[in-house]
Amino acid sequence: MHPRIEDYALIGDEQTAALIGMDGSVDWLCLPRFDSGACFARLLGEEENGHWRIAPQGVQGPCTRRAYRPDTLVLDTEWETDEGAIRVTDLMPQRDKAPDVVRIVEGLRGRVTVRSALRLRFDYGWIIPWMRRADGHRVAIGGPDAVWFRSEPEVRTWGEDFTTYSEFTVAEGESVAFVLTWHPSHESRPPLVDPWEALRVSVDDWQAWAARCCYHGPHRDAVVRSLITLKALTYVPTGGIVAALTTSLPEEMGGVRNWDYRYCWLRDSTLALGALLAAGYQDEAEAWRNWLLRAVAGDPADLQIMYGLAGERRLPECELPWLSGYGDSRPVRIGNGAVDQLQLDVYGEVMDSLSLARTAGMSPRPHIWSLQCALMKWLRDNWRQPDEGLWEVRGGRRQFVHSKVMVWVAADRAVRALEEHPDLGGDLAGWRALRDEVHREVCERGYDPERGTFTQYYGSRDLDAALLLIPRVGFLPPDDPRVAGTVDAVRAELGHGGLLRRYSTDGAPVDGLPGDEGTFLACSFWLADALHMTGRTQEARELFERLVGLANDVGLLAEEYDPTTGRHLGNFPQAFSHIGLVNTALALFGAQKAG
Image (cartoon, rainbow, N blue to C red; front, side):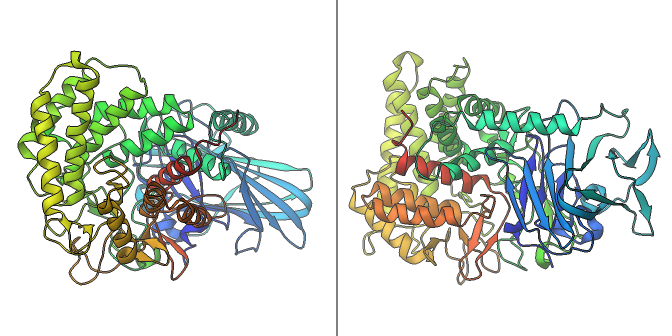
């Protein structure tokens, strides 16, 4: 049995990250980048697909307690046994060149025998490396990957399972350290990391970063934890923010809705920028804006919905048949075929992001406006096309209402930019006409007057949680009766256990996929925002309280939640969910700041 998705905690170095279960096992780690092959893939397979567990000898279950050190990404996990108590401290120090995983075992009480079991399997659990001794340490090599294992206790390799074991005893006040370091196998070993200095520096650095948060309202701890999580999901060399750490964690247990989220989506851009700017993180927001500019550079017709960490465009999707999947949820996929879809909403998201960046006073770039003009020229000629929409459906293109609303956003932001900065130059009359035409068409073809709600696509009776963004982006004011009607209809028809689904999966679903999915946490935060904007602030706060309470014991949220089973679903931790938490907290309580 796999641990529950919510049983995992995150450590990372802002270039990759690991998931550690409550049993002390590192079950997911891709090296050297978020999107590299995993050397620990037990999360999506079995123990033989790679993991590293440190726990008291003979203890198979979860720890007694665990927590991050305040305002850090340093994790402390503690076990109480009949013999005594220990603490395992896990971290990934921000790297100079090579990624390191540091694990420190401390005796808290009595004398406890501890066991470390390290099972390295490169390329998502496919390659068993060759392990040998070198310079007093162990080095594992398989193809392009090499990992050095530095262990203070003596280690040995047992049997045919190709696993490196250590058994040792720690007494109260004693401590031992392990360091795992990756590097390309054709290069020499990188410099050794001092685990104690790495711990001290990591704690200081994370706490100094967290102290910059300017939000001081209710649930500040949850907001700071979400911001730390977004920082941990940032690929710091480029500024790109991955949607999640994992691939193929299922949206339905045992189902096929399993996707790779280790890439950067343009749909996240405006919401992520808003969260970072409002919370006081100008540098991170600017790094994300700069990633966006590099990624979308080129022919506007080639604009993609997602890119790689450095702006890579080819993200071919394939399946890994040797992995059994989380909870037997197959297939396990890497890459993402949705990269080739047409989603018109991304043009609006890019224009909105660059408008927000300009308003926030980010450093100007001389080519930004020319890029925006090129995007608008393409959009003016192509906006009537059907597309796959925000949710990347695989059931065929449609005239999605949210996509058309975001076309309106693109035109509106272009018009506003010229009205505020006439010297920029552009087709003001043409963009105004486009804005008016799109608005008119959406209100005529995307609105159901009988039910008093906008619909998922033209001519449909189905609804879509993305319609909740209509007042947020300014398409209609919050006091418009059509907005209130849409909020009520979406809440009634897509609600499940007080939370929201993205869209209906009954009958012949628009996404063309079998099975079901859970409630989508980002959409549930959007519902709280919409309730607040339409004057139902108390209901919004009650929903926000519930959503914050869904985070796991260390404050992390997955993509989805199943109210029936009380389980997290989907990739984890999910940037979209944590962006939603930050933005909703700022909307509801943002005025409550320290004086």
